[in-house]
Amino acid sequence: MEREELPYSAAGPNSPWLIAVAVSIATFMEVLDTTIANVALRHIAGSLAASQDQSTYILTSYLVSNAIIVPISGWLSTMIGRKRFYMSCVAIFTASSVMCATSTSLWQIIVWRILQGIGGGGLAPVEQSIFADSFPLRLRPQAFALYGLTIVMAPVVGPVLGGWLTDAFSWHWVFLINLPFGCLSLLLVWLLVYDSPALQRDRAAMLKRGLNIDYFGFALVVLGFGALQILLDRFEREDGFGSPLINGCAIVSGVSLVILVAWELYHPQPVMNVRLFRYRSFAVSCVLMFAVGFTLITATQLLPQMAQSLMGYDATTAGLTLGMAGVVTIVLMPLSGVLTGRVFQPRVLVCAAFAGTAYAMWYASRLDLTASFSNLSTSRVLQAMWLPFLFIPISSASLVQVPPARSGDAAAILNLMRNLGGSIGVSFITNLLAWRTQFHQSRLVEHITPYNGFGHGTNVPALMQRVTAQASMMTYDDLFIILGVAAAAVVPLALLLPKLPKGAVAAGH
Image 1: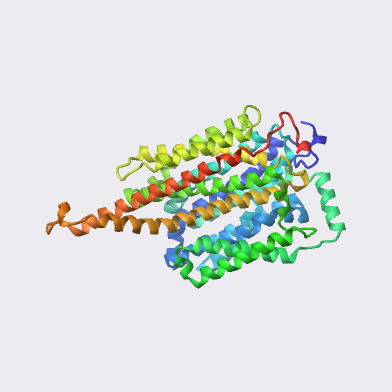
Image 2: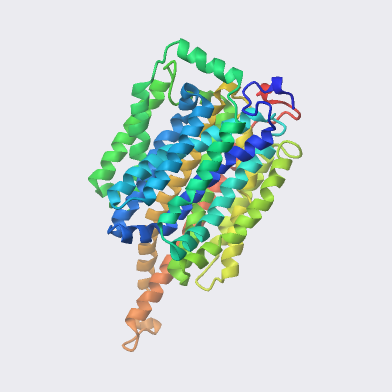
């Protein structure tokens, strides 16, 4: 691997694989914390004397600040310096995690969660730009496979570890566990990661031209994505578009994002580089990554929710239905890294993976109230096994045509699209779940008449409980079918992905 062919490499004299391990620690920490916090939410609310509805702001505050930082993290890393910005994000995330553990009121923890989201939002995009710049194109799929392992392992470990920490100790350890991870990450990045001369020249040239900070663009990002995240997260709780809050967020978000795109197209130093969408590989990859978030991330929430609400599983058992899928994904992630580019082009793998995802959703839609633990686990395995063959090829193909100097901006937008897909998908199914359940319940009740054997001796409460459960099950089946149709719909789009030139190096993209 020739250094001169990788002008933006963060490895310096070190092995890029060593750098890959060093920067993956913070990703593992950030994703782990998200899943752990969800498990401990009820305990945190009880300790801080907050209602269940109020406690959801602990999650919303993090998501909103995270959504604001992600799209501008590429610009921030260029302005501040990639290594300095990355270490700042790790430090902010770690310190705010400790402060979350010391919180004694709801508003204290919300403030610290906002700061935690700011720190966490900058991690993934910068890490992906480090991976893209430090590995030749022929090795980039294997590098992204290593990065993908951390993203997959954390959600598998998170619920189990979070439940154990909360039960054995207290919810405070859900946040305190980030301290050793954060310190280790800071130490390794400080010792091993370099800002290359090319990266330093770009920053110096930017500062020499004058720090023309795009204040208006930044304000539009805050308003647009902040309001959008609040809308998605609170839509169901606030009675949808019957709520002034939701209507206000929809207007603010829509207007701000439309103006943002027009503004950033012409600003000399945009905080969100929308001009990257002129590269076909990047534009197609963003749409496909949005579809990954909408289908697979949404399904990750759907199956355990169904197991708990309809089949009487406790949180731990429901979480275990995801366990085997996590193991399968971890095993397949390195295989996908080897196959991408070397054996199969990204378009082939992505087409096959979305088709496989569509089949997996159809399989899930055939589940009923008698489904066993094995049936649920099999369903999840069929869904998750395709994730490596989506994440790695899309991530690799997205940067093929993007100039190396813009890899940070591209990684930020790609992460934004995945997060938006997941947020919109979860909000969509949450609202559709209530509406379709009512629809199916009304249709089933129409058939309960004395002529169908339901007379005066019928146990009405027990009967209605069965009707409600059946209506809910039918609704879950509907939702899986919708996710399957969405996965199948983007299969033709994957054919537009460019070929990875075999043996090409980073300078060629």
